[in-house]
Structures are given as C-alpha cells and as structure tokens.
Image 1 (tube, rainbow, N blue to C red):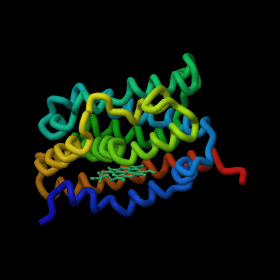
Image 2 (cartoon, rainbow, N blue to C red):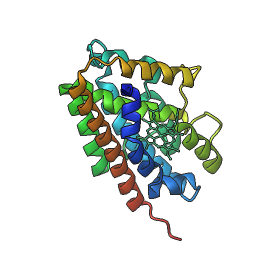
Image 3 (cartoon, rainbow, N blue to C red):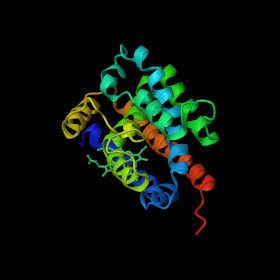
Image 4 (tube, rainbow, N blue to C red):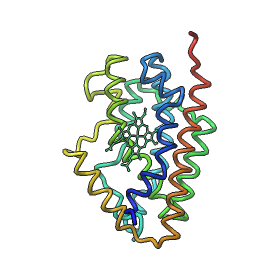
Length: 215
Ligand code: HEM
C-alpha cells in the first residue's frame, strides 16, 4: 500500500495542475501582470497565513497537528514585510479579503478549532507548496518586477531558517506517513486537501476576474 505522503500527493495531483495552469497563475508566471496584481495576491495570502498561524501556538501541543508546527515555516512576518514594501507603511489600511479568500481563511480557522487532522491538510497544501513551486514564483517575481533577489517583496517565498528544503520536505513526508490517524481519518484528510486546493483555485479565479488581461 502507498504511504500516506504518496497518497495525498497523488490524490491532489490533478488539482495541482489545475492551480498551476489557472489563468491568473499562468499570467503571473508569464510576466503578463503588473505588480499591483502580485500585491493583491500577496494580500490574499496574508489572510490565509493569518488563519494558519494564529492557531499554530495552540495546536503545537496537539497530538495530531503538533508535530507539523515548526517555527521555521511561519510566514506571516515575512508577508507583512513584503506588503510594507509593495503597498507602503499603511498597507493594513487597504487590506481586504476577496470573498473567496474569506471562505478559504474561514475553513482553515474552522479546522484549526475543531479538527486538527483537517488543519494538517491545509498546512501541507500551503507550506509544502511554498517550499516547492513557490520558488518558481519567487524567481519569476524577482525578474518581472525587479525585486532584489530574496529581498523585500518576495520574502514570503524565502525560508531563511530552512537550509535544505529538499531534506525538510523529506522529513515532512515522514511526518505525514506517521500521522496519528486511522485509514478512514486519512481518507478525510485527503478529501480536505482536495478542498484546500479547490479553495486556492477559487482565489485564483477571483484574482483572474479582478485582473483580466487587456490584450
Ligand atoms: C504556478 C504555480 C505552481 C508551480 C509552478 C508549482 C510547482 C510545484 C513543483 C515543481 C512541485 C514539486 C516539488 C517536489 O517534488 O519536491 C510542487 C509541489 C507541491 N505543490 Fe506546487 N506549484 C504551483 C502551485 C501550487 C499551488 C497553488 C499549491 C496549493 C496551494 C501547490 C501545492 C503544492 C504541494 C502541496 C506540493 C507538494 C507535493 C508533495 O510532494 O507532496 N502548488 N509544486
């Protein structure tokens, strides 16, 4: 039987392709969007990570979610530095969540409060993605909008305290394989991961509508 880390990756593969090839992501990676669209996207991430990380302290002692909570992963402070760079010191004033983002953050919060294993699905979907494809987005953002390499504007994608991302991901997959959940609960976590991907795609769809290409 496949390991749980393989199962969750395989099960979300199709939706990963969908997210990767969404209009908004394609336009972003294709260098066809202005920095305003990137800033708006970064703002949406703020709401998601606020939901993920506000509960991290409490979940650290949870038997299921606890092992996944690592201070090296925390992104909120980096996101705030990026937003200060992108929007200026008053970045909080104009910060608004798109309805799709509100829905995503609410679901993360709900899992954090009521279902730690479901929270793991969201944790996996974001952080393992950021450690992987996030690096492609960073590289593109640096080139497209002229941010300093690994500097302000793209700090969200830079995990300063993770020296070896490949090793970190390997360890993370081992944690997934050892998750304290029976088979039925694992199935539920996989389903929640798919939901997490769908919530991300929803945010991309909304961003795509807000930033249609004029061409
Ligand atoms: C254009 C956007 C994206 C690109 C180019 C991209 C690219 C990649 C690549 C190359 C990997 C493989 C890394 C490896 O095998 O170690 C990966 C893994 C992953 N990505 Fe993405 N990705 C993108 C968007 C997303 C999004 C939007 C999500 C979800 C929010 C996501 C979640 C994940 C996850 C969870 C993994 C880890 C899979 C695993 O090994 O279990 N990615 N991504």
